[in-house]
Image (cartoon, rainbow, N blue to C red; front, top):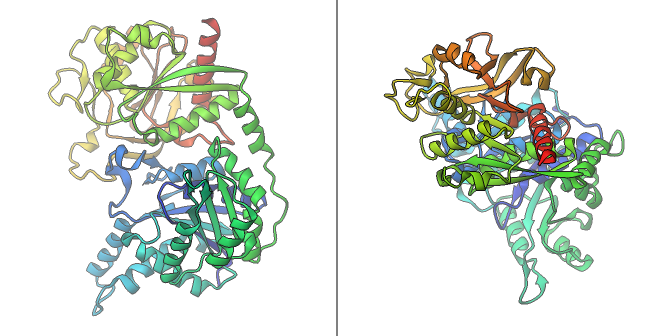
Length: 538
């Protein structure tokens, strides 16, 4: 019998209540008590992964070391726990059905009628227990996407019901995150939506063990007692999750509420120690008490939805705390950049980050932003497409190649300084076919990035199809745009920088994916430091 314990986090009443943050916060507390913990996300949509989804639909697509394109909640898991996730940590309905259909085609169910129960639910149960079976973790927390009552979530809920029965009461529990809304006209909190949500869960055969209640106002003792009585949970298992100024406050809030204590009691576990959150709280102290501030312009084309750049925004928080600086991020839509008004608009900035993206929309605005940063000695960081825009800008305005472009935006360009990777040219399928996951990169010693990393070789996560065209490398280097990072296997350029500029770096990879509270990414730390120095000169 497995010694791994399983915690399932479901949501009710409304989406976007923060299941991922609650799961990550509980995991942080359990980790701080000495347990080995990981978190996985079960997403009910039929896409095999979020790789082909527009960021407006689903926020950013997070990439793991092993090349999985996953839900952005995995970013929260890594940032909180400082533990790497993998393909096994994110499962979608599309992946479940794809696997079952492939098994059926291979004849594994020969003679059987393949059905949601037991075949789909068995596949879900296998995926849930995959992380627990190898003995690496004491506790596996599984977040169920969507809201209880959704049609698409039903197979997951049924799989959880079966697992609880199979594993036994001491080895599995269900945390139900719900909303307790405040009616301003009546000036009171209402428990009825939560009661209905718990009832819906019970109709599926699952009793919630712990209620976590999202609220804008403090829950009174009477209200907690009422919730416990009508939702059939113990009084100590009604946990308040009041709105916080930052997601990084939530572990401490859950500690005060005793979420970890009631969880361990229910799972019949004895903690090895009291939660040690010293490093976490040191980070929080620096984050909340900055000594100065900087203003960074984030140039992107999905700026209306902050979740599109979630990992970048969190990396700025980590790097800001490391520098004891408050980073104000100013969102600038690349489609709305007018070269005539750039000087006035950008003069207030202390740094520019040109963000990742796909397609030709808003490209010229990004090129104009790079040019301003280069010509005005403004600290610059270009990520993925942002690095490619830096290359195009330099080719056009320094090398004088006016028609320089990427074959992504202009397939017939005569000067493709950015072009499709050779091994991508025969690919027709869009999902999961980019250069993905961790790739190594050799750094030039006497370079900005060499000093930033303090290492000769690094490994960073990628998600792209188009690359720096090495045919132009000699021209660029002679003109002052230096390639300071290359992939040792392919020779492809991963990093460009301008040595004569105060701080100008473009990277083909996504450093934001690896920034955590415990280990802020060195590239973001150095960029924010450069912005702080620029601000002090102003």
